[in-house]
Amino acid sequence: AQSVTQPDIHITVSEGASLELRCNYSYGATPYLFWYVQSPGQGLQLLLKYFSGDTLVQGIKGFEAEFKRSQSSFNLRKPSVHWSDAAEYFCAVGAWAGANNLFFGTGTRLTVIP
Amino acid sequence: ETGVTQTPRHLVMGMTNKKSLKCEQHLGHNAMYWYKQSAKKPLELMFVYNFKEQTENNSVPSRFSPECPNSSHLFLHLHTLQPEDSALYLCASSQEKTGQETQYFGPGTRLLVL
Image: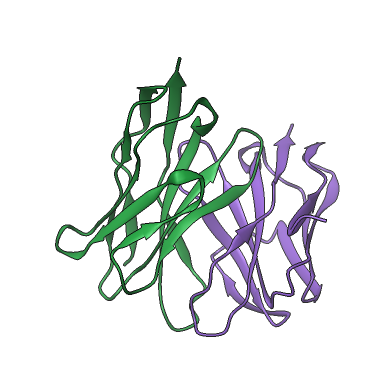
């Protein structure tokens, strides 16, 4: 069965520092991987996605993520964090063949300090 | 108009009330979803509609009743809810062509059951 693990519940970084949010997945076939961000009181906004091809994918707001099949990981990175990046981040894995299902991790809350 | 809208944004109801949540997508998509987001838990997929037909019902209690009158509108009818049903209810939509397409989320309805 598919599952997603985000091992860090809460991360605090200084503004301008680099960021890496971890995501590990369990899935028997080629996964479709997503990162979403949720600001307080808001829905989920897609940051980036991986379906195939280049394993380093670029997203909005300066985020990128790298798919590493050997490690079953899809970590999210940003070289320099801005205060507006404070939010909750969700990793999700999807299945092929019309299943429509996304399996989400429990999220990582990011706090940015000045 | 933004892509996926939800009304109301906040709802407080007693356990004997009947209410409905509304979702509308303006993206021309053909699939719509209801998710439940509770604190410290992964997003839970509740219902999926493809081309107005319900294709998924993840063991959701019958006190939640979905309705999809057309591909742009999705409702979630609520009756005799329990306090543990208090959560953020998110609607999403996607264009299903090849089996796994990106889901776009609305801002959610924050529900409190007293």
